Image (tube, rainbow, N blue to C red; front, side):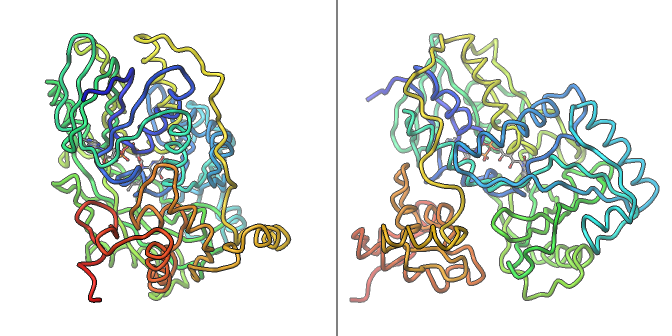
Length: 486
Ligand SMILES: Cc1cc2nc3c(=O)[nH]c(=O)nc-3n(C[C@H](O)[C@H](O)[C@H](O)COP(=O)(O)OP(=O)(O)OC[C@H]3O[C@@H](n4cnc5c(N)ncnc54)[C@H](O)[C@@H]3O)c2cc1C
């Protein structure tokens, strides 16, 4: 049966979720349709997690404007959604005279974009901020921050859901038709939705969604970035983010060291165009390159510090022979009235996401009356961070209230049974092992679940009645168990 909405958003990445959360402030029937089993399974969880300052983009571009605006919105947003964020600053390092010119251009560009506090530092000043860092000069951008990228995307989705937005997970949109008054959206899993306004936030697949409506002018070229995650032993080695001065014609910002808000360091990302929009392979060749670069940027790094690798795909509008960047496309189509189209939202899309949501809201307002709901609740329940980060007196209080706080399930990350239970009972009702991992941080430590996964399997069986076929890693078909022997 057809279900009617005012707005349907295709794609539950950080952008789709930010749009959903923004629209949930108003009297609208809204839905998010996502092909994966959970939100933020694509690019939005596979990036550096940096809240960029806005030095990298040409003044007057959509990216530059939304970057600075999004950066400024993050503090309040993260407070409301209980998401970790730290404005730790960034050094962009010059190794030679040409790089120094680049730093001056970046500073000028950043200032034109409205980026606060930019400063060129000499080697001595750099060393004070980040002892041991190589290079002859650096540009300091103090408004650069770090965030938990999937934490933000999940927080936005859960808050949107709490404020009335429906989420259709594991629903791949296979067919869209324009009815003149609006749209009909069908999914492989059988949902049949109609809406007045349709938002394309499908990331790497945005061009395919466009083609479903006869819009053929866009092509997305996936460009892979691989990362290595370093053990928390190195926590504290990096006071700021350290990036190389960008080189002409590159498709990304260069391989860099990035602190994560949870105490790891990332090395990456590499830069390699690939054919498929789901080719998340990690290659031996790039791992070797990242190790080499990592040793150069962080002397003292040992091979045993590499605990895992992953990759993400940039939805680039520029083909491999062109490289470089193209501005974001954020448009309300005149030829397909009611279709709001987001294409090529590569970096800094995470940073821009709340500002993109405002822009989309204004486009929705041109077609539908927006009346604010007095029932909108901006605050997500819970607290920022994990039990083990709380002071001992608060921990003792919580254990007193609920003894599940007193049981550590994940030894590496010190995650308690209560935190795992909360993740299992997540508001979106996602039942996969990956959902528990992204929400609780269990299985993200040095042993990568070697110790805690069996314990979590047991909890799911005992407390939630899971059968062997119910254990899904992340997507349909990724079963953890083939069956049971007893
Ligand atoms: C290597 C790398 C590093 C980056 N680093 C940073 C950074 O440090 N800071 C920053 O600000 N930005 C960074 N970015 C960019 C940022 O990650 C992206 O701009 C942002 O995540 C894009 O979000 P999105 O919601 O548009 O796309 P996505 O996260 O890709 O979401 C799109 C969703 O649409 C779904 N979908 C697609 N087709 C369909 C369909 N037919 N039916 C239903 N659902 C569908 C997908 O499954 C997906 O979940 C980086 C990106 C990469 C790749």
